[in-house]
Image (cartoon, rainbow, N blue to C red; front, side, top):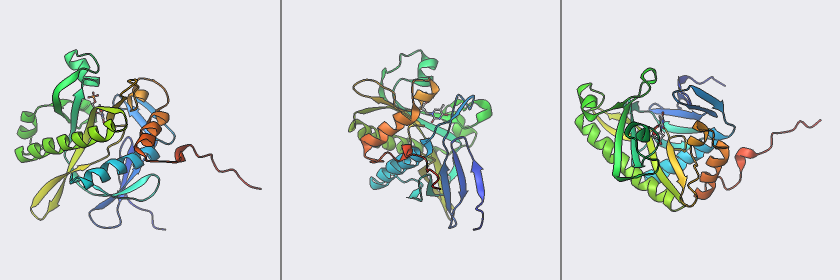
Length: 253
Ligand code: TMP
């Protein structure tokens, strides 16, 4: 079998060349990192869960007309996606204060926002993904004014969808991060949601207990990350059987 070409390896995923032009294969690793990769671990089963959860969210977005990169899941850890030109910005939407917003503005965790707040961070690991303003984005040419308007609109539509889906299973969507890419059609481009949507890139709190069901469990050593993600998947009806904890095969003599 021919060896496929690796295009890019990130902290949690590997991208391979896809079978058709304009496609890629996205492989979900079990690696978890936090604080710009200062903290690292391999969390068995995380990649499988995030592959399924990202498929679930992206498919739901497609159904309500929010364009995204997902084409189909290929296997436990891989999905076929459209290749995009990633805009070098992390688009964050916040419904309640948490994480860096609390640190920056001295808010207490869980304070509701008067309305969803959209933030942009410039994707640069060496700089620690700094928060940037719309002025920076336009002036430095990372995106046009039209792109910015489209990014905000996409982010808010994702927020509405994700908040509703989570609320229905007793989970509060505190905040999340998405990445957005351009796809080109001749001289024109349009923007679509790319990368992944999973508990790695969201904050999810149980509405009843406030229990954290996202990557903060790993960031802050609050328990078992796979158990938290499995709980999210179970509530959403993804992974009806616990495939991530299947016993390892035993050698038969
Ligand atoms: P923050 O509060 O640390 O700025 O994070 C906001 C949201 O973005 C939260 O849901 C976690 C997510 N996030 C990522 O997906 N990747 C990152 O590198 C960081 C820092 C946050």
